[in-house]
Each structure stands twice: as structure tokens, then as C-alpha cells.
Amino acid sequence: WFFVLLLGPTLFLINLTIGATGQYILNFLPMSLYTGIGDDTNWLGSWTIFYWAWWMAWAPFVAVFIARISKGRSIRQLVAFTLILPTIADLLWYGVIGGAGIKYDITEELNANGLESAIFATAQNLPLTSILVVVIFVLIVAFFLTAADSASMSLAMFTSTEEDPNKYLRLFWAIALGAVAAVLAATGSLQVVQTASIVVAFPMAFLFFPVIYGVFRGLSQSIRESAVEVAAAPAGQPETAAAGEALTAGAATVVQARTDA
Image 1 (cartoon, rainbow, N blue to C red):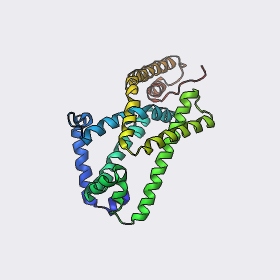
Image 2: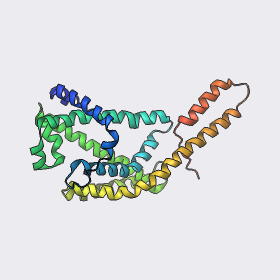
Image 3: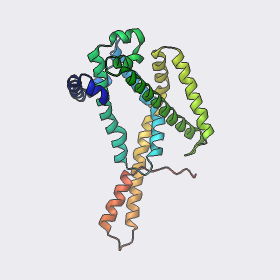
Image 4: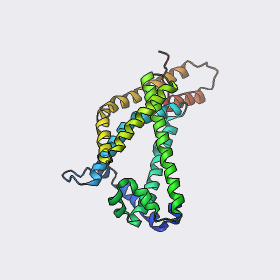
């Protein structure tokens, strides 16, 4: 990212990122819900639906994995490090990397080799292309490995109901995910991946509402329990500080569900 920003069209990328971020903030709802109805060739509409489905399909895996590594963290910290900071990073990433693709006009390469070649087509217009391509390839491999690892961990936790599932079960799900990915990749069409994501994500959309309700219900119960603990505290303790800390902890701490039942 820094490499492209510093050695690419820096001023253009800065202006584009600032302008695009402002437009996105002002038109957040219309752009988020735009589907281009009536136009079957509309790229923006098709990708809006695809990304809805993408995140719905990934939500169960990501949620379980984040909950596992966030034990003991507050909800404030969880929101900051999983929503706010990644959103800012995405705006900067797409502004610079996507802006470089716009500046260098890689449309011809995309038409010839598909959308998957976008990052490599952009790299061809930058200095130290051979080194940059190797770095990009390593980053892509690292992304797939970490994503597969977290997904296999989540699936193993789902099927075993254990917080630390057996490594052989994790290996099984990793191989299964790899096999499914290989079959989809062998089709040679991004449309198949989009369709598969939408099909898998559709039933998940109906599960989000009870999950959201359960989250708020659990937080309310945690606050009530904290209030009871404060009321039952010995009279000799400094009540103001103890009550404030207990209520804050009850409202803000991510509670790890007990699995001993």
C-alpha cells in the first residue's frame, strides 16, 4: 500500500481517496442498497448483492473465531478493532490500490484475463515489478491460509461443541474447504463463486435476527447480574468506585459462554 502510494501517482491517489470517501459517506444508504434493477449487465448491482451474500456467509465463521480470540476484551475494544479500524483500512486500501488501477487504465488487461488479474495488471505499471509481484503472491497465499485456518477452526468448534477441537477434526475441515474451493476454481468462472455464496448466505439472513436479539438479551442479563453483585458487596467497600467498575464491566465485557453443561 505504501509502495503504491509513494511510487505511484501520489497526488492523484490522495485526491481520489478523499473525494471518494466523502461521496461514500454522503451517499452511504443509496450506494449500499443500489442493485441496478432492470439492467442485467450492471456491474455495481451484481456486486452489491454478491457482497451482501459474501458477508452473510462468512459471518458465523468470523464471529466464532473473533469471539474465541477476544475473550476478556470489552465490547468497545471489539467494535474498534473489528469494525472501525478495518473500515478505515479498507477505505485507504481501495482508494490507493483501486485508484492506481483507474489511473493506469487496466481495462484491456481485465477484459483479456478477468478481474482476478487486476492487482497484477496494476503492478506492471509500477517500478520493481518483479519484486512487487512476488510480494503480492505471498500476501494472497497468506490471506488464503489464515482464512482457511480460521474457517476450519470455526467449523470444528461447531461440529464438536468444544472450544479447543481436536486437530484431526480441524484438518478434516481444512481439506474439505480446500476441495470445495478447488472445484469452484476449476470452473474458471467468477459467476459460479458468486452464485454459490448467494445460495449459502440466503438462509443465514434469517438467523441474524434471533442472534441480534440474543446478544442484547445477554448484555441486559449481564448488567442485571453486575448490579446484583454490587448491591451484595460488603458495606465497607468504596461503593461509588466499585459500582461504577462493576457496571462498566458487566455492560462492556465480552462474556464467554459456559460449556460445562
